[in-house]
Image 1 (cartoon, one colour):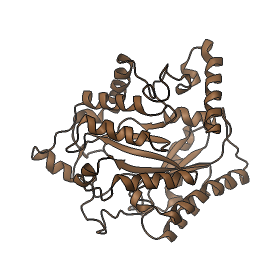
Image 2 (cartoon, rainbow, N blue to C red; image 1 turned 90 degrees about the horizontal axis):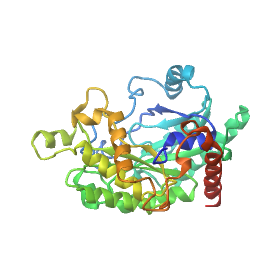
Image 3 (cartoon, rainbow, N blue to C red; image 1 turned 135 degrees about the vertical axis):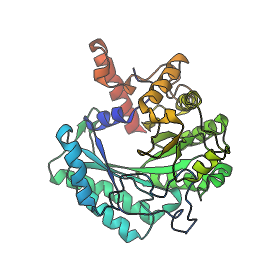
Image 4 (cartoon, rainbow, N blue to C red; image 1 turned 180 degrees about the vertical axis):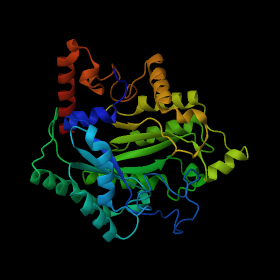
Amino acid sequence: MNRYYQLSSYWRHRYGARIQKIPLDAGFTCPNRDGTLSHSGCVFCNPGGSGSGLARKGLTLPEQWAHWQGIYGPRHKSGLYIAYLQSFSNTYGPLEKLEGVLSQIEGFTGVVGAGIGTRPDCLDEQRLDRIARSIGRIDAALAASGIQPQGICGKAGAEVWLELGLQSSSDATLRRINRGHDFACFVKAVHMAHERGLKVCAHLIAGLPGETGADFARTVADVAALPVAGVKFHGLYVAEHTAVAAMWRSGEYRPMEMEEYAQAVASGLAVLPAGVVIHRLTGDAAEGELLAPAWSADKRGVIARIEAVMQQNGLWQGCRADAPHSTPLWFSQQHMLPAAMHDRWRRSVEEHCRGNAAG
């Protein structure tokens, strides 16, 4: 049985199928790179940012979509996708650019939703209002194409996730890593998004310069108190061409050991509400970028260690929050369980769905 609520389980509950995220590069930049806040960026971020970089290679969004569908399509039976605007801050810049980008992805074949990577200081009411309109527009496109996803929770409409970088709730840490905003800015953005029916996935980093395990635990607890729908956990790895690389080379920064990281994430999961969707448990550097720690390249090994720590210590997501008695059965997917448990599993998922609808 799963001890945390994986994104793959959430998709199957909601849409009744596996959903594939397609990473898109819309050519946005970042206020921490273009000189508005700084030119150097956050200490952990390289100048190229995360994501595919396909915009720099000249591919338009439709061309990128076709590229990835050619890779994923043959083995992706459901044909349902999330369009993920991943590279840099995708709400930074003119509102007209955001409008143009969203208008394109809303019409891509098989799109059931969008993920938009951005910063909390790059959101305002106008941008959030426009992003929220994507929900209805994607629903209309699905209806026009005859696609009506059906999950255990019933008929499923479109949804939009804001992938919102926080990293730490400590303002001192945010200044130290040159983040360019404070925790209050993140809190405001989360509430504005929640009011519009948008789901927020908070990105959190363990092992930031100057932080202890207690600091990371405080960040997770602070996020758990907000209307956040998902979390991505990352361990801070040292990538080439970053400020933290210079700190590591000089001995000013030491990355976490894998055991430290596993313990920190396992404890963090325990205080998150059970219904918060875990989008990832660890991050990985792009090929050729990683300097340290070597263990972070072993993604499966890191996840296995986190799961082992949870099992050894009798932990599961929400055990120190809203699920204190036992691991929710709906964390797991039906095919992972013995046939004798399938009816009980379905009842538990349906009860979870009803709870979500009532909430």
